Image 1: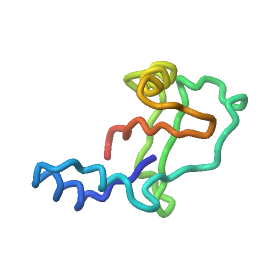
Image 2: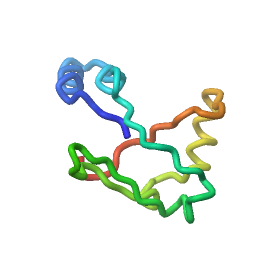
Image 3: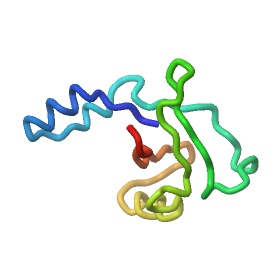
Image 4: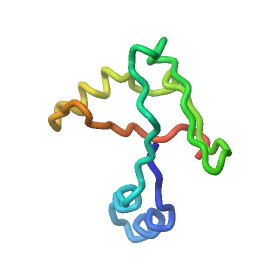
Length: 96
């Protein structure tokens, strides 16, 4: 999941500036241990969550994604070269 510095985001929005700096700071991309795809029953129905201090602050399911994994990879690869190990961040589940 990605984190957002809401104060920077709002400041940039108020000034009509791009707000990518509110998303791109040290520690802004939280990752868990990777789970081998062979251990996943259905990638299109996978629960995930983010906990802060033991409390769930975000949760979702891949079935709620607007676009499927294949569609996302196909689209992104039109604009940049994707290599093994690259990560694609797709957005945030509802309830932020």
